[in-house]
Amino acid sequence: MRIDIISAVPELLESPLSHSIVGRAIKKGLVEIHVHNLRKYGIGPRKNIDDYSYGGDAGMVLMVEPVYRMIEELRAEREYDEVIYLSPDGEILDQSISNELSLKENIILLCGHYKGIDHRIREHLVTREISVGDYVVSGGEIPAALLADSIVRLIPGALTDETSALSDSFQDGLLSPPVYTRPVDFNGWKVPDVLLSGNPKLIRAWQDEQALQRTKELRPKLLED
Image 1 (spheres, rainbow, N blue to C red):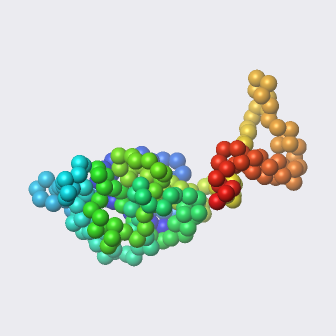
Image 2: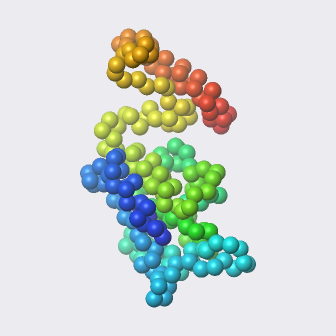
Image 3: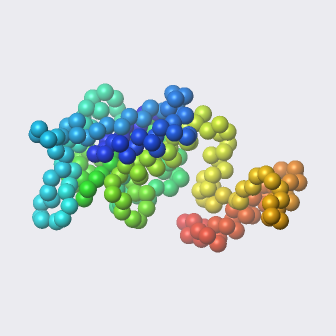
């Protein structure tokens, strides 16, 4: 799989994509992630990539030409399954979207910045818009890193134990059950006896019950959905 990320501030993506599961997946050759500086196609001697908004609204807007030229350069080298814009008004990211995107071969993630991007980019170049939640951050870099992480960890071989992803929260529409490790007793706080029983059937039943109960208490809307 290959993920190309277009950014006005590529430095923001260096650390999140270089360590832990994503970094190891890259080293294993399971995924390629390439971050592209939009200023490569900036306009004029100062390589401008943004300008004032028509209509007089406050804030700068990423211009259409640099984004168009960058995407055209990438498309000249390979076909892309999706060109995704990280946007506050896109579809809300959930586990099913990450599962779906992990099966793609090549995707582009476009990071907005400042006030946003020229709407013509969204009309003619973007194939999908994804939001990481109903709030606003300074740019699309952190959401892009989050989306990339959620995708990469699902690629076979990215996790040491591939079954681990199957028990993550939201994979079955529920939150995960509580997890414990050593010691069995700390300050009188004990691991539930059932987890020490060695009986897989009882353990699984307890985990299912706990997952359902936690979802009812903490995220009831998941059950409605």
